[in-house]
Length: 154
Ligand SMILES: CC(C)(COP(=O)(O)OP(=O)(O)OC[C@H]1O[C@@H](n2cnc3c(N)ncnc32)[C@H](O)[C@@H]1OP(=O)(O)O)[C@@H](O)C(=O)NCCC(=O)NCCS
Image (tube, rainbow, N blue to C red):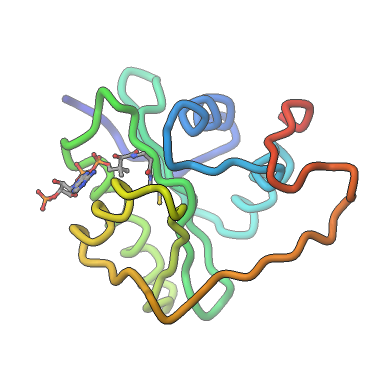
């Protein structure tokens, strides 16, 4: 299997979202709209990556930081390309890039029902935190479902 890892760019957006939508364990929301992802990539240049095979996006991950800690979101590998080291390669690339800019620790969210995902991260050497819970509040337009993926935002 030949693939190339490239920094994610907006030209990949449609394929990346299509991949995320087919992958279990990825929770999409209006945060993943075209405008928001463009903004994210602009704020975190060169940190998010895709794996490409014959011009097709076969894996993707968002990576960013807040100046203190790094964050990974939406790591996904197409089912036909799993268990070949692509997920690890993307994560390694993100962590190495974070380290070059002085970010020594990275966090991510795992959906509670994503047992496979949790096993992957443990295998990758990540610690599943039991000392933390995530709290969220939505302060956007209340008519927009904060948990839904609004097709009109694409
Ligand atoms: C999780 C996912 C990204 C793994 O991608 P992948 O390319 O198959 O992973 P890799 O081949 O790089 O595997 C890296 C290591 O993790 C292990 N691994 C991969 N998937 C695993 C799983 N489901 N359970 C346990 N270990 C797993 C591999 O055996 C490998 O271990 P090794 O290098 O020590 O031999 C992929 O299965 C996926 O896209 N899942 C759906 C989306 C998802 O859940 N993403 C995570 C959101 S938190």
